[in-house]
Image (cartoon, rainbow, N blue to C red; front, side, top):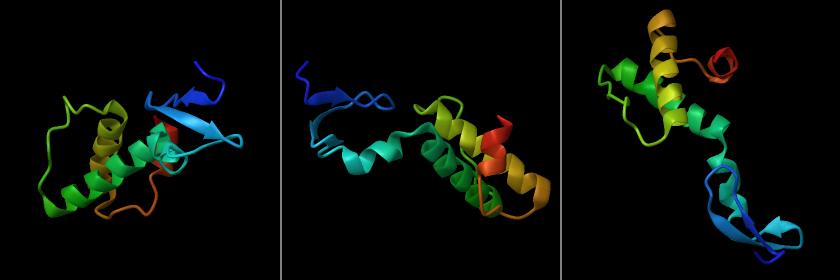
Length: 93
């Protein structure tokens, strides 16, 4: 692999480094992080629990998102409200 090429550890996508930064992948790299994917799932879970329309994420392709989704449902059911942050659920896992 060329010294200017790299592979995202989170999503395995290859990208080209320029000036020590990734070019096209730079803006998306943080979106690959497990914490971000958990957060998306968490807030989807709280919203869908509030609406009463839950999905089965048992076989969801992104296990971290699915964990966040289930944690969001649990958080909503425990409080009856949608928490502003998923941090407590993230730290509890």
